[in-house]
Picture 1: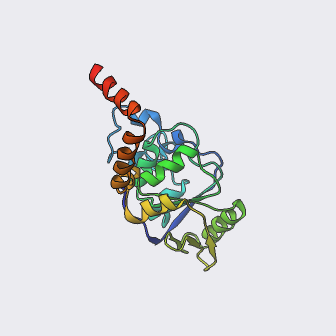
Picture 2: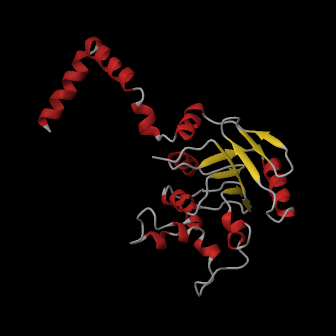
Picture 3: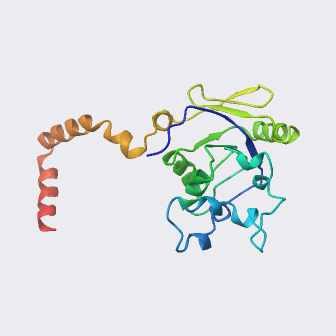
Length: 215
């Protein structure tokens, strides 16, 4: 079950590259024989985070203070594009990321965030650029607030930006529920529909029952 998300005030790290794909977030080479959840956080952004000898790359923002403790990423356009690997989101979640604020995301990556307790927030590119500049000017000292209940992002200087979010996904994150759990909350409605549909279209349910017997 994903961790519930209501409001977060934390250090935010700008990663403003365009088209950061899922292979940059977690390399397929690191997943081979190492795909168990709980073991991927140290490999997030591996090609950017580490030098060829395995030591920390001092130029990468998440290796510098205070960004090492960042729980929010501010990202460039099309973050999380590329393959559908859910491990990209797992690795970010395992390194402590709870929210990602950007102007655009890969569609599957965006959906996977909600299933794993990470809130992806979409704002206009001009807003993202301004937010990143403000964070950099404060050298990471200015904290960013993300409020899912109010649907706002507040910059270090106190400027509030309202974001849109699908109501079902919002409810799931607020309560820490994935898609299956949200669906099961409507179990009585599903069963009522099935009962009515059996009366209205018995041949469909009979055909399905027969197919199951033959299988």
